[in-house]
Image 1 (cartoon, rainbow, N blue to C red):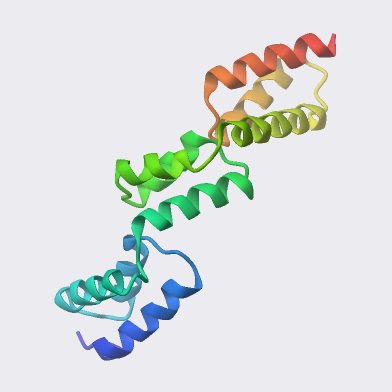
Image 2 (image 1 turned 60 degrees about the vertical axis):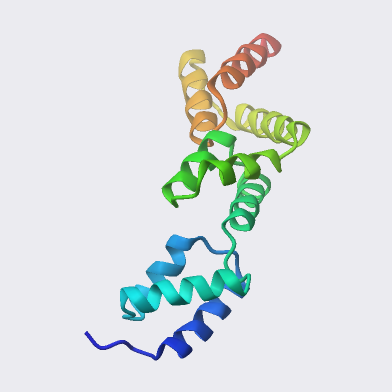
Length: 158
């Protein structure tokens, strides 16, 4: 299996790849495999990227968590699951979640819940409740928050 480029060219490509956007180790390794690099070359390039601070898993986790929360309005459960899927350590996951303030988290949840409830045009209360809960839970918010909120919204609607 012949590689597409030399290790030096691959390093340059990956420096650009990492400089453009925060990356996790898995993404970098996948990219290097797509460039047909050997395992030894991959290891040395990853080490070089970490040494030169192009690759930093803590920075990635924090950036990922804050971005997904602010832009996509994801809850902590979904963020944790996505980070675990990228093989991020639990220490880094905890640091990333600590970067989301509880006030901001609660505020995002309240806005998302209200918007979702207002946009559901379902006459059957049970169906409306189920659709609401499914949607908010899929977003990764904690079930106790969701069920308390749906009770509050139902009470206010009456």
